[in-house]
Length: 263
Image (tube, rainbow, N blue to C red; front, side, top):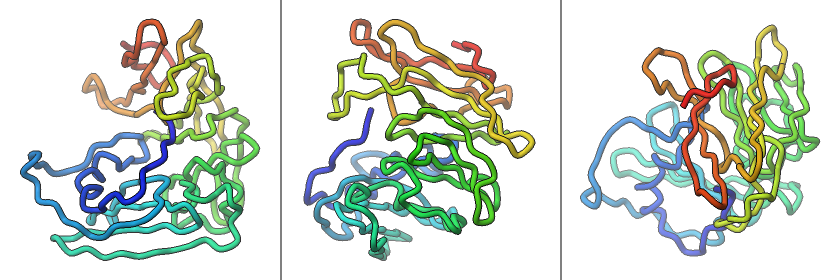
């Protein structure tokens, strides 16, 4: 699954129904609190918008549902819903190059002091790490740990052009790396997938690659990121991945945090 173009004229009310599914936590999961049934859920129509490029879901202060729509310029349209009340804000990043139009890089964490949008790979997104740090993929292909207005450390990783960095509660980072076009599916228009999965330690204020899972043959990791989740109930997160092959299709593969195959 790769970055796709959204069609013009979608109704934001529909996006509010989907935003919990599109919301991605730091560990990569798309699970949110609450429950409902479809198609009985009440639809809230906020507005129509033009030329959306990328959609992201989230929350404000852990309470409100927020949908962010990156437009085909430097604007980000955000819609916040609380008890059927919708508020809308439109922000822009002046001076950003045209290749950042509609970019996830425009969604900067509030603690990203001193980081320029143009330092981040255009199709990737910085994520908070702890109380005062962020992690992001730099334009030179490095994973950067940024804190208090400066780079603490960085590591060359050769990421996907649209990789999403994920991190578990123990501070272990994972991301898809080593772009390849050996998988010809390209259902969303981008033929690039990942040939490897990197697992990175943040111990001792240093980014260190602790394991790299290398796929062989025609296999690729498909998607923007793996997901951290406790799959066996032992209170230790595993990495859930999608491994695809043009001949045999897609399958879920689970790895332990040390890179060993789990199931």
